[in-house]
Amino acid sequence: MDNMTTDSQLNDWRNQALKLKTEVKKVIVGQDNAIDLMNIAIFARGHVLLEGGVGVGKTTLLQSVARCIGGAYERIEGTVDLMPNDLIYHTYLGEDGRPKVDEGPLLRSGENLSVFFFNEINRARPQVHALMLRVMAERHVNAFKKEYRLPHLTVFADRNQVEKNETFEIPSAARDRFMMEIPIETPNDRDLRKSLMFDLKYQNAENLIKQVTPNILQFDQLNSISEATKSY
Image (cartoon, rainbow, N blue to C red; front, side, top):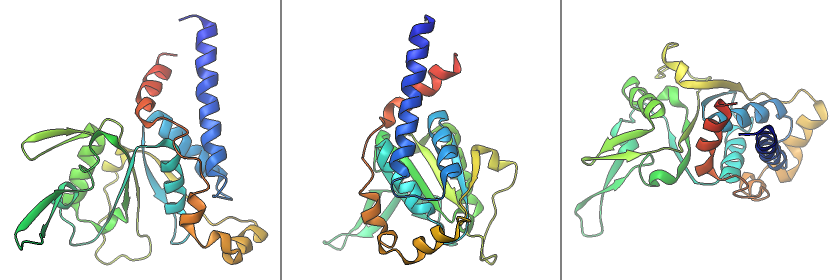
């Protein structure tokens, strides 16, 4: 590959990353460093552990990023009674009174699953962590006597840092499955904090996220971009 082609590709990828940053900053303010780090993780195909207290905008930030890169977005809440199988399937009674089985959040979108958010992962038991960490490493899971491939999966997780009862921290040795641990902190600027508290436009996350242009990146092309950059 000649230098002109290489420079053109690198410039194109840089422009895509800058466009992603610009779109997310439409609705997320005071988090430039976190946005930059998430941008790097997305293009490097690494999973992310988000660090921050309640109400600092982690979910809104993540949903904005997910809207930009496209693909399917799934979420699960960590609870003490969550079981590994809850990631794979869930059962319920149908209208006919008979038990039904549906695919769970890891499987229902198939290979289109782009972003998976595990909220308060430390409230789930170690058995759940073990399955999640394996899927993060291998990007596939076996269920219903078949293999489900998740080639475009990026996992974002956060931890409940307030409650200590009935929480199960991921061991340090296992946390290397996360490429980054990104802090989401309350902005230091007084006027910005005041705006976030009292400006009504920041109170409706759903309307905020709609301001982000969807699918400005192609989630199913990020793997090839990551592989190509390793050769430079």
